[in-house]
Image (cartoon, rainbow, N blue to C red; front, top):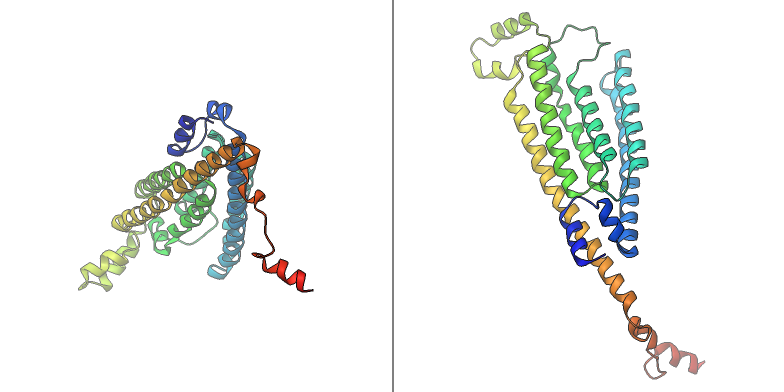
Length: 272
């Protein structure tokens, strides 16, 4: 691949079809191996994490309605399997679609109430469980497999979906006004505490804080992917230049003759 094509790859999220046509075998091999190993490691880590979560769910909520979330975990397993099958070096809309499906399913699982739960809880009360942290499991896996530009998109899509979910809960969520009245009566002299404990309150500032921290973390992790891409490009350039050297100097260490006076192993052999 020419230096121009190499530089184009180093500043973008991946190779286009025309880049592949110009690519040399060394860069393609390095990129393919890095992509394959990264995806495999990410999917394996993902499945281990999902297995841990599957065990934790009944510990946290030992009831039949918790099976609903166990079924949703199967969806995450299948998406991971599809990501492994769809992974390729070139820019792939299928991969981006699967990432978006991943984030959408997570948002649905965390924002939409469990239909099998028969308790009369306000929809906003589910934010009290701090389940937004599960997005970090997906982010950690994405860091192993995708480029730095994709990680920026990952963070942006998560923020947009979480805001849309917040708007949906605010407009269509179930409320129980009687709970707010009882809490207000109990905390009549603690107005600021009431703002934190009202079960019908969305706590928008906390939702903004969740998004802000997530975007910060994604922005910190993304440059590492860019650095990895640049390293792969430099390694491919070195491999190509070495392959173009004449045989006499392509491997200079092969022409070095170890004399007996300088080799301790040779001296040991003579003494035997």
